[in-house]
Length: 282
Image 1: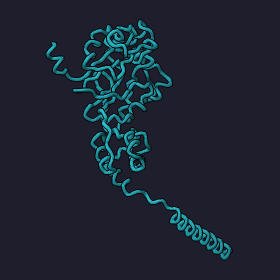
Image 2 (image 1 turned 90 degrees about the horizontal axis):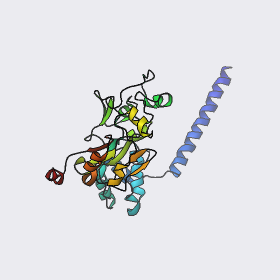
Image 3 (image 1 turned 135 degrees about the vertical axis):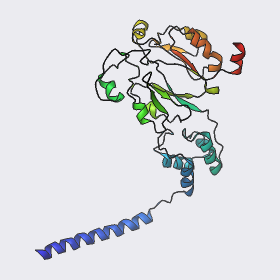
Image 4 (image 1 turned 30 degrees about the vertical axis):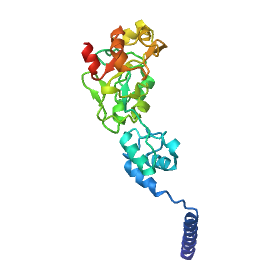
């Protein structure tokens, strides 16, 4: 019996040894040597592996950069590293880095606990994703922020935090890399990546409520009611499903203050500092 067991062990060991030798020679014969520039470029990258560039991670992005030609390289961009990192990569590869306007995550909702007081008690798991599937939300708005902070937990850069007074997530402009993780995480699609704008000035509709005016205002004091007053100021602005949308192409410097004043509910937000021209007009 012992001889049979010993023989079995020797046979299995021999098979394993032969298989490993075969695998070694096959791997050597068909090995593909990676371009040494890949490792160099990967070292330039922030190692966030967030996928904001559209690739699986920093290594995959580095491989794509090396494989690209001058034309396709211009379509590659690392939002976390920004222009400075892309310039390093372009210099190493002998390409020209494409100009990119700095961007930031914007929360298109202002249904804070002050503007949209709680009407429903949610007593479930502390997760926006789960709450979105079983509850309309504390504010009663079917499109508003659920205030449970999935976006804060998902942000790898500490750029999001919950304001204890409003119960709402706040974007730290100094830390936000516009990686887009919050966009993917929010079950109600409330985040959007938009250009930072000159002096940090941006104008947008901080509302995603598609309910009709009276019902939208019942749930939130600053809900968009689709009145279309903003469209008269700039024809690029469109209203669909009772909701206005201001594209990033609409200049906050030129139209921001006028749009804020025209909005009867306060759904339009204009952030950032006044430009010298605006100060002179005050």
